[in-house]
Image (spheres, rainbow, N blue to C red):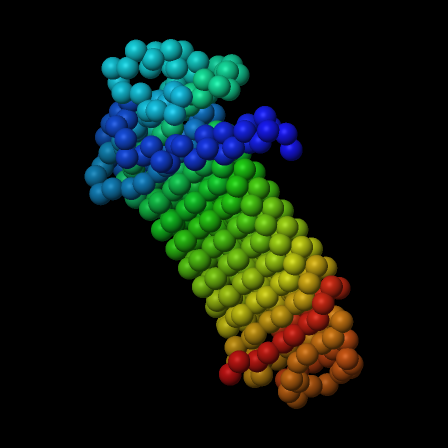
Length: 328
């Protein structure tokens, strides 16, 4: 890589992080809207990141940070109008819908390093549709129906609730403490979710998938790394072509399906020795302590019923071994 290209990549990385670092600085523009009932936030930016947080007041506060050459411009700065002339900026309320929108009118000179970032504070009961093509997203505390996407950075969720979809093509997707069904996907990094109650769908083509302390059903896949799942899961369907697949679960009642073409497959099933299961296990070597089993048992394959059968347990490893443990 030549020096010029290296410098460009470094600057792009720095620009993608600037928005969140400037959250504590004074906003260039601030608008406040009263909300007497739950509403919807529609926000997008092609010039920077977006953060959404909550408070206990019946109002939405939209703060706009206008940046030029690495600094946030004050409302009285003479360069504000110059930057805004390069953007379509819309901040308004229509009924119970709040719109905060910033889009470049044309491709700007890269070296001018301008951008617009939003920091938005909303009541907790607020559905959100938030996207960015110029930075990452940070969302905390909202409850409703949500869609989040970023092509310029990662997506980070914390203490959210409701049916949620989050995706990134520019970084990782991370979520902590969520209630409700959730879908997470990334083509630019890994996916992680910790402490969630609801069904989970997670996929990554840019890294690993790690799901922990999940209460609900799980579907997970990765072509860029391994997959790990833990929690009280009624079913788990997980696959990887880039690494191993691991599951540590209790409460299994519907199905366990683990496959990997890039590593081994392992499962720890709590109280599993008492479950009725239909086993179909195959790998370089299959390690399992069978109880009340009828069927075919070989070094690299197990096929049959344990405790008279019941829950389908399908595990395949074309790049390693299969291991099943029962933790009483």
